[in-house]
Image 1: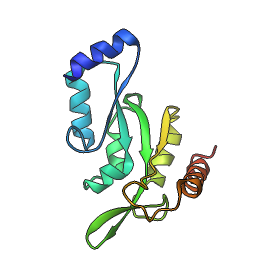
Image 2: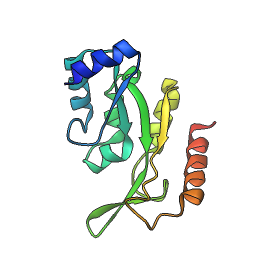
Image 3: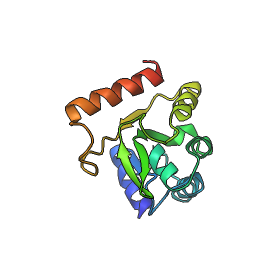
Length: 146
């Protein structure tokens, strides 16, 4: 299926991003296997730092195992573990180690997409997006030094 989708994407000059979100890929080994098997320059990875962490991976180690050119977007959100269950919190207020991932991206000269995944839908206790999103975007700008 991925090969067919990528052929269609190539005909239209668009990229397909597969997120590290379980199911299909949730670590660098699976990302690299999918990229190898599909073998299309139009298939890329949407690297979700928190999902890698939630699934027991080390986000920095995992991202280093994927060629930076194969990552079309890096997605940020944060988590806390409450009553043995992960819940979304404001970026920088949880336990996801994302700062070292940002430093790595900066050192590699990463210039593709950065996504702030604001998950109020899943956690209505998060601040209104009019407050929470500017906070998180400013935090990302600070860490990316832009």
